[in-house]
Length: 286
Image 1 (spheres, rainbow, N blue to C red):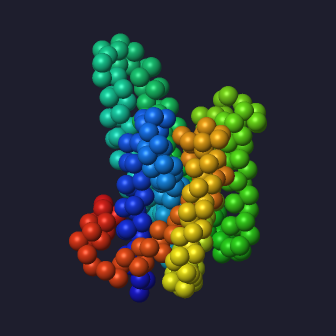
Image 2 (cartoon, rainbow, N blue to C red; image 1 turned 120 degrees about the vertical axis):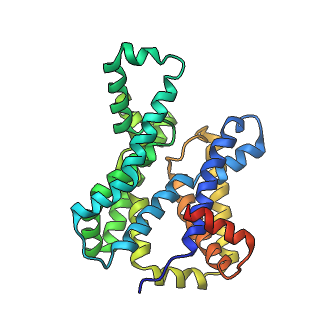
Image 3 (tube, rainbow, N blue to C red; image 1 turned 135 degrees about the horizontal axis):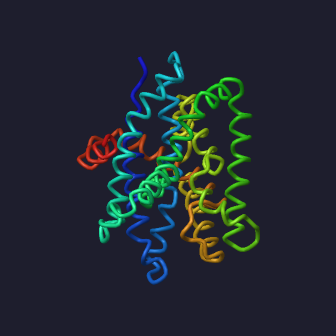
C-alpha cells in the first residue's frame, strides 16, 4: 500500500499562506522594510506549488497503469470546471460597473471571456491554472522521459527553466531584449516553470531516499544554507529593483533550498500532534 505523505499537507498550508502574504505585503514593499523582507521571504510560493503538483501527480501515478484519456478527464473535471466558473465570475466582476455593456456588445464580452480562459488572466492568480493544465497535457511525455533517464530529464529541464528565467530577469533589468508580445506569456509558458514540476516528479520517484537525506541532513547547516540563499535574494532584489517578480534565477535557487528546508521541518513537525499541526494539516487538505 502506498504511504500517505502526511507532511505534504503542512507544506501546502505554508505555501498557501505564502501566496496570501505576497499579496498582503505587496502594496507596502517600497515604504516598509518589514513588508519588503516578508514579501521576499515568501517568494517561493508559486514555484513551490508547481513542485508540489509534480510531486503529488507522480506519486499518485508512478506505479499505476496509465490511460491518458481517463487521466485528462479526471484532472480536468477537478480543475477545469471550477476554473471556467471562477473565470466567468471574475469577468463579470470586472464589468460590474457597466453590466449593460455586456448586452450591448455580447460578442466583445465573449471574446474577452475566451481570451481570459486561454491566458488565465481573468484575475491575478488564475494564470497558475493554465500553467498546471500545460503540465497535465505534457505529463505522459514527462513520465516517459523520467522512466528513461531521471537525471538527464532533470538536468535538461533545469537548463530550459534557467534560460527562460534568466532571459525574463535580464529583460526586466534592461539587459536583454524580448518581443513585447512575448512578455505577457512568460508567466504562463511551461518552459518558465518546467523544472519545478519535473523536480517534484523526481522527488516523488525517489521519495524514500529524499526523506532519508533530509532526516540525516544537519538542520543547522540546512538553516545556514537557506538563510544565505535568502540574503542573496534580498540583496539582488534590492539592487535590480525586481522585488515584484518570482521569475528569476535567485528565486529559482531560493525556492529549491526553501522546499528542502520546509520539507525537513515538516517531517519533524509531524512527530508532534499539537493543535497548530492539526490546523496546518486541515489547511493543507483543503
